[in-house]
Image 1 (cartoon, rainbow, N blue to C red):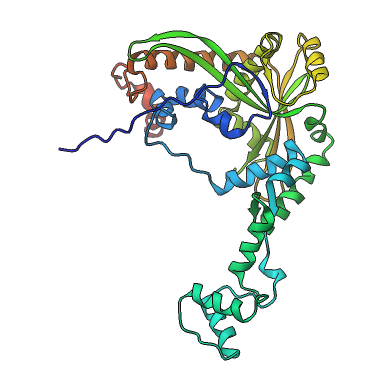
Image 2: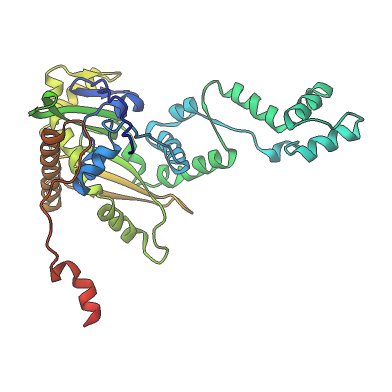
Length: 367
């Protein structure tokens, strides 16, 4: 019989409700409050949310190369050059080091030409080369020195670094996009409580939400979005609309607008944290009754990073449809949390009887 392996589930530390400037991304993501990604997973199926959540003891977060590139590009555009320079370092290039020694055969050839032994593993050969000539272009040593020079910063491949810097011009030189990241604050996190609920296995449970705004302005929430792998025959603008639909970006926008609407209440209660000008907060409150909008800056992440601004208006019908979906997701969360607590969430819906409508595409093909 198979034995079920179950690691203890530890509730992550929570962050008090409020508006946070300069909160680290790690601290934000560590908090178990529901973000827009969680809402999207709940709409797909509550089991999907549980699988990706802190409640699953087997869940591990893995960063992809695309995310690494996106985070660096995000830092340069949203947070500015000083923040980018403080976090990222241009790594060495083999092209800048003539005769660079990378492979074992190259190391052996260098040693043989100078009358040294060519016996041993790669690490031994590298040490022998450096012992003979500390300035020899041994690639592993060049990389090690770069790590030292970086002083804790992320070392980017030089081609990636240069591509990010060059690509940023498509946004910073675009008059419709450049001002989107000015006169405000980057990376503003909001935490708020929707309500309490009773969970038999854990007692009273607070239903909490969160969002992290790329760039907060008096009258706008700005979000930087990349588009990748879209069909090449589709116009860029159409690809944007398809991405909004396929990835539920409208749900994210509505969720962020919900958080933005909570800000005046949180600020008046004194729940503002981090490095922010008091005068900016005061002016924000003065303008808090004015209409605001959610702004996407979409850029093409493959090929030329063409940029396009798209505005989401909270007074439009699509916003109310998205809010309705969010409320449906939160209700699913309440239901499944009340039934299962933090244990594995499985499907509890009624069995489905197949209908012709379910197979309308196949039936149409037969006809």
